[in-house]
Image (tube, rainbow, N blue to C red; front, side, top):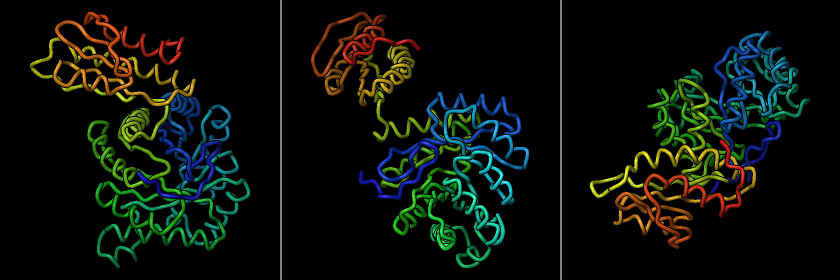
Length: 365
């Protein structure tokens, strides 16, 4: 896929835009004023693969809490600001690596300018944008409802406003809970600005239903080459957002150091417990990927196939694989048969072969 060319900005030590990889973001759902709980959740998010974290800043106490949170975490911190420009300035002074604002609810130009000046002084970017629930009355009157053109025009008006105030370290966000509307609005905006885009489906839903909307909505944009950083927005533990974001990027081959798992759906020809085997394989993938990342090992494909119809061919196409028969499996590496093993040893021997081939010694979880 051809990636949209965008300007690059830095959020802490994470590059957004340019030729940098699509970064994964999430947002804490703790009370930011509860510093231990927020720090603990950010640590869990980082361990899951989150690269940028955002915290709500509803009042001055929360803004000042950022100053205590920042030294205790290891990923860039974004302050989420609404309505009060003074909270944005305070968050910047307390070490935020980026500020998220909607200029429309910050106030007049003088207040916006003060936020921009503070960000410029600290050399941090600002994420600005709109969602379908925050369109101005003038835009709604012009288009009659929330439409792709309405979202795009509102977003581009915001960009123009900020640029006229001589600030261009921007990340632009346009979000809707309507997947198709979201895609069309992004296409319009992507053609008219070079600022990096933060993508996602807002208010997507629960972990179960939100995954589907996010996969379609975010995946469609990434297939269009649109998107520099992303958040999967789910109702629940934010760690789930990160894990699913990783899966979306992996499916599109936009993450390095990963395992692409191919497994057949099973049918009446299957003579092993393939569901059990594949579940165990999935459990082994995460610790393997952590080691691959440490050693900068490129993406590999692993195939777990259940019978003799498509199994041998699919497994030979993969870097490593197993094609199962009655109570046994044939290990295959780079298209060559390695050995036949009993069903109960399939996962252990498959990953032993993978680690030996990749030069991974430490495979502790």
